[in-house]
Image 1 (cartoon, one colour):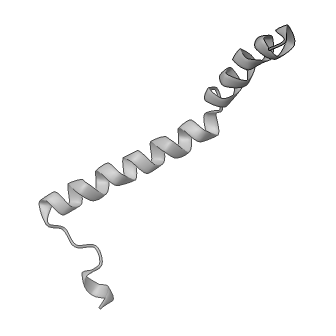
Image 2 (image 1 turned 60 degrees about the vertical axis):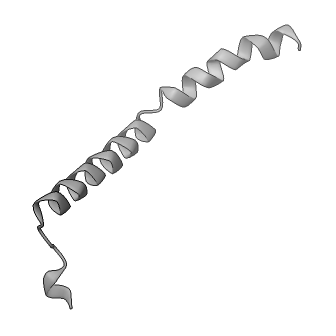
Length: 51
């Protein structure tokens, strides 16, 4: 590999992981998943009136 490609690789990895929108989406999805499991554990049915 050339020295230019070796020097560019860390910059690409840093850019990918420093993207705050990806972290925000991941945080919201995980929060929703935890909330859903919490509601299921307590037996709360949010879709009971939809049938």
